Image (spheres, rainbow, N blue to C red):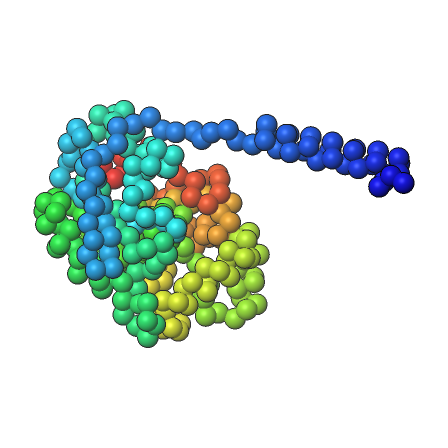
Length: 296
């Protein structure tokens, strides 16, 4: 007696044929490569100082004497500046296309995920104090900067706002891209957080994940106020660093609302502000205007 009757064999053959066809189709239609940026990578030297890893990047054609401290986004590292598939390559390509002397860039990293917060009750807090204390050491390797600038995206965008608005006298300009700025505290009620997610169109899984991350570095609402850019900007005036802010309208992290509020409040306080609302998702970046801001 055969193992399978004829009708069942036909169905089995059909199912196997469909599965094979689906496998071939997914292979054919899968992305075959990645768009890369044509540019001349900067020369790099990397260093370790306690928990801080940092890499110094100098354009081969020379630099303008300023230094940009780039605080990277989540799950990246200090090697990202020369990545030819990342937006940082587009900034370098723009400088090279326009024959602009760029700043020296220092990409600083405390690991895949971190927040610059003053020392508080949480064990992981205190990285802001450490970063500021390491500036003279980094300056010694780059040479005394004409101006210090801050640059960061996403997690790094929040970090540069915290550093620049807490220590405004130490930096001339801040470029914050798609920063994690929220009008609602991570210590707000659950209904308030739900309302924020609905109002901003944020992905709930991302939104609640970010708020949980914040609670790893700040213990309570009082500590949150010490690092919230919307609170820090209340002390700002015309002598604060010039501010470049950008965000995509359809940011799955829900950051557009907070970034727009920050741009408005900073301008009201007298800060020089460039606000770039973009039609796109998380970390949509206008690299040409950013390149000009960083090198002007």
